Length: 514
Image (cartoon, rainbow, N blue to C red; front, side, top):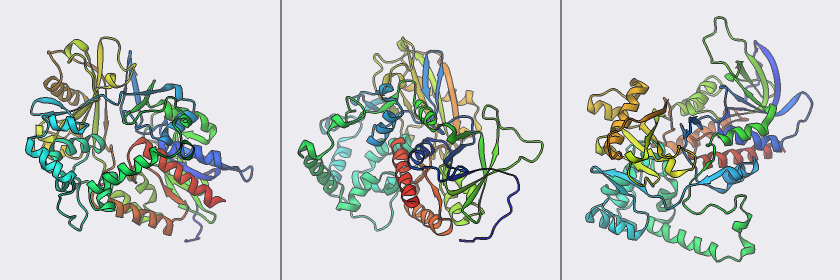
């Protein structure tokens, strides 16, 4: 480590053992666990400081409400994994948990019809989503009769086409990839984006062998004596969620980051925008520009004063492109690796319709649209079908997503502007026109609830992603020990992944301190 001392112009504000930059769900969870595990060693140093540039916590978690409607502008639900459920209970939100019916159908829009995704072998046999030839090809793959791995990393399309055939890829894998990542199956790494599935072949030799092993493990676990495995009675949520259910909170996902923020108290600083990260003789200093947390950031007429916070360790829970900017002078290699992670634009459009203009009853998770169907919308979540209190009686709230990694090529092919060049009105008109084609039973004007464009939405786990992240972690450990990253571009974009990763890093930092 270079121990040369730099000159810091500005104000020395605070000293903290750990500074966490970014108050999304990763930063909030990490800061909470560090606050619980650290104690101040002297009066001048606080254990943890969590700094957030904006006036609110939650990052991409953003619940909006209007009149009697409520919708999400970011993640719409979560898989109720233990770490996330424990956190929800710990911050006093157990009674606010709402769970969607696991049996709600998912739909694919194919050849001008909404067709349910088959979720069982019997449903697959009778499904019209795949042809007889497509079903036989998928069955052959499931039984292990597939070509051997090519000896190099495969894209999502290459992996699933080799395993299950082109029909499964076009009609199921491609729209599912859009639904999770807003991604391009020709660019995403199968092992990075879908590690549980692709990893079965890597670990056991085939999907079939891996599935058999997983069933055996599940059976052995289920037959263990009750005293030897965690009983559902120990779950912080009663009754415990069933397999396949999705969760939310009664007043929206925003409740969770706000509840964690309440626990953090004065350790959380809003309106603190990190602009510098430098090394000093004892660790690091983070330079912040501090704004009124209730005011919008505007271009300053004079140079902004830098407030420096000394820290022994720094954790960046920012998106990759933002972390890259802070690291560009301190660790150029890490900065370069972070800049290689793309984030496509996605717009979220929330519209409401009277229930008499929709199929009766409107019951389901929502629908996804393969790009081959020639539509702009990636998919629509039937929000008021999933969770209570999302729309007033007699109306439905529908949340649609438009854009993603394939939108630019789609727009170029059609000779139309990309979504980032469209106005909010134009994006809403596209979504309404396509919902009229897919779902509406009669012409009706929508109630415009809201629209949010995320210019850089979801990190893409493209080919080489796992190696890129391994190189990033090695560079941080070698060149800037004590600087960490913790965000959804690492190894999982779901909320449960963010909580899992943050809690694991907190334990690592605490173990180093001891």
